[in-house]
Image 1 (cartoon, rainbow, N blue to C red):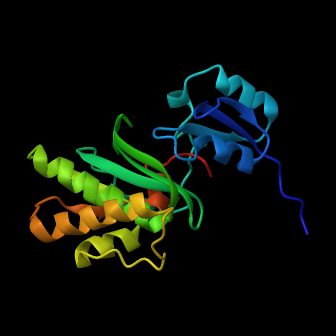
Image 2 (cartoon, rainbow, N blue to C red):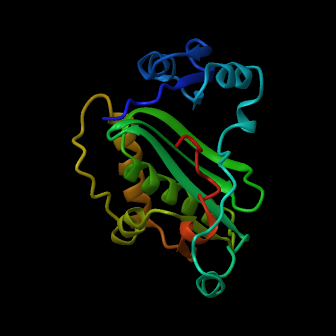
Image 3 (tube, rainbow, N blue to C red):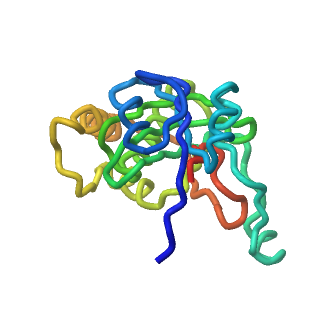
Length: 213
């Protein structure tokens, strides 16, 4: 059985900032801290260097992507529509600490972010991110499309229901409060925004990805 690689956690914003050597220590700093900023690194030196830098220079950074699809497949899929917003969620555990955000697909400029929340799932975060994006685009009377890499979230939005198996409790109340608001919004609003599946195999990680994989 292979030994799990050690990670080091940089916390830019939290109850305490610094580099932490375990997820539990990192979690203690970001729990119940609105707008916490954190990311894992494979070495202590990399985490320490990041701490001296800017969180935005590290979040969402992924390795250079090379698609394994054939040229014919890539041509058929085409390029992303950059007149769009991309949304994504991240959950450290399932359930675990969860957050979600939306960015401009072309520039990756962050347009909104929520969390981290003490307890949620990735599917719930993806669902909330989609509805948040729909509401913003409707309020701005925008013709942008909306990208997500979650088929589950797309299905939940179509059905106007968050079909999660997560049970409600005191820890996840803030998340379910948002879920209830999202479902209410879907039932009381119409929208023209087209929701499109992000083609990860052709284009790489969605621009809103938190880059913590």
